[in-house]
Length: 207
Image (cartoon, rainbow, N blue to C red; front, side):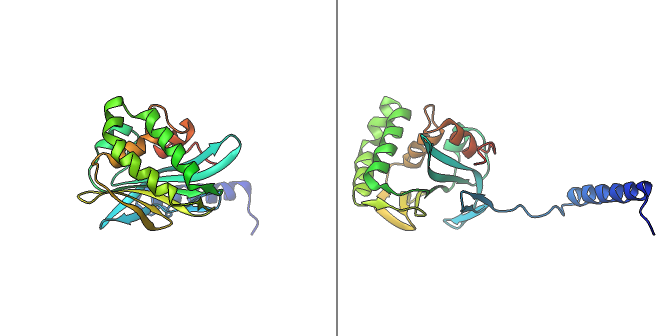
């Protein structure tokens, strides 16, 4: 039997209604894992026995170069930095390198971001962690493409940094360590405004 325009329109109509019914009934297709520049960004990660949800992810550029993909995981999503800072529970920020960088180069950039986003009092309180941070990256001559730098907040255990899954530099005892580090990307003078928006859940980064 030939498909007349009327018959086709009826079939299309039924398809639209069926799709709407599936969405309303909770049968929407599962969300696909995000991929940025070949880096798989999972929707969820486990930390300290808790499941964290991807708040946002984006790319850090320097001039015309892609430096790393950043992904922020939280107990619940939020688009407001102050809400994120005050949020209880474990948190994670993962950087996946898109080019080789020296440990010193990355450490210097992080230090610069900290200085640009902490108040004088906050910076004074952070100095012990800053020295610990500098020693950590000085020990790593090169962080290669595909390797990860993960900043973690483990309530009751302090902050830690992992390089390619291995904890480096011991535990940071400052209870504000994670928030101070996070301000590099979410503060008033972020590393990159577009990346800040992406980490806060704006999907406009795209590339």
